[in-house]
Length: 128
Image (cartoon, rainbow, N blue to C red; front, side, top):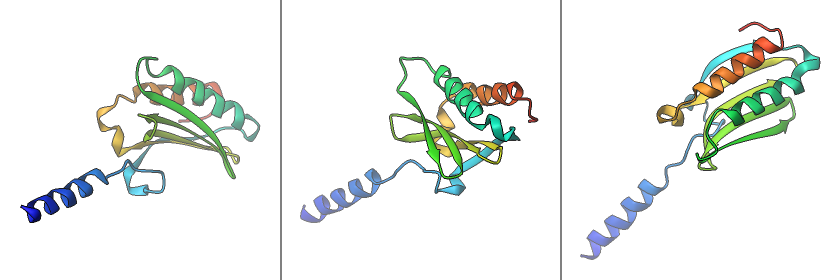
């Protein structure tokens, strides 16, 4: 019985230790779209993406949008449950912008984020 309980505890610990991918897990993300914006429009583009991501899901869902300042620009991300990263956009100060989707987004509809990124690219006069 003791061996059975020990095996159960070990198995439960291993199963419970899985975590959602972060941007450091490069193999867990797929680049969906990329483009270039004028350097003087980087902040406006990041704000546009942030606002679009906010509108992508109902207020009743447990999906959050976050924007952070980074050394090389901005990152706008959508999380489910406060910790599972679904979609991430890099908006770099050199004008490079890229939309990434996490493997964790397989069961979540991210069409709204994709459309928001496209709209912001077209609004700021850059190519897809």
